Image 1 (cartoon, rainbow, N blue to C red):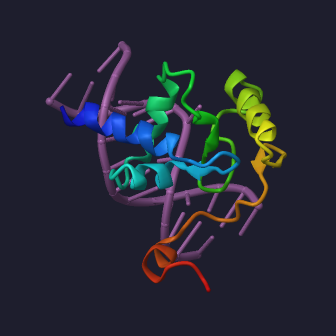
Image 2 (spheres, helix red, strand yellow; image 1 turned 90 degrees about the horizontal axis):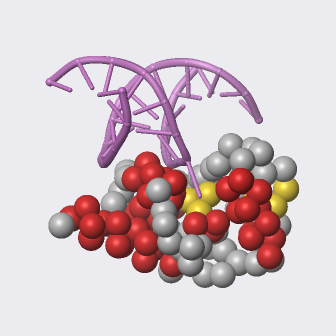
Length: 111
DNA sequence: CGTGTGACCTGGT
DNA sequence: GACCAGGCCACAC
């Protein structure tokens, strides 16, 4: 089934995130071959039952933690990211400036 | 079957 | 920085 295949690709995309790095939902969705399906990724993580899935490496486009502040997942993600050497400040990840805009997708990264 | 909701994204003001 | 409007998809009611 497609949906199952999509879920598998999304899972692979998340697993493909290097340790110490982070990615946005849109980013993951694009890598999985599902442009615009960021919500699908989010829903999967919310329903995820895979403890070895590095969901903590997935954040919003602004580099902001997706979960509501004070919730379990929020603190969990923050802690895990720090454990990987990622600097988290005020519920936000340092080193991640804005998400890749269309220009960067088309024109590529600034040299 | 229409509506609301959600670990979302982008562009404009 | 904030806020708003539009888009996208899956699911609960």
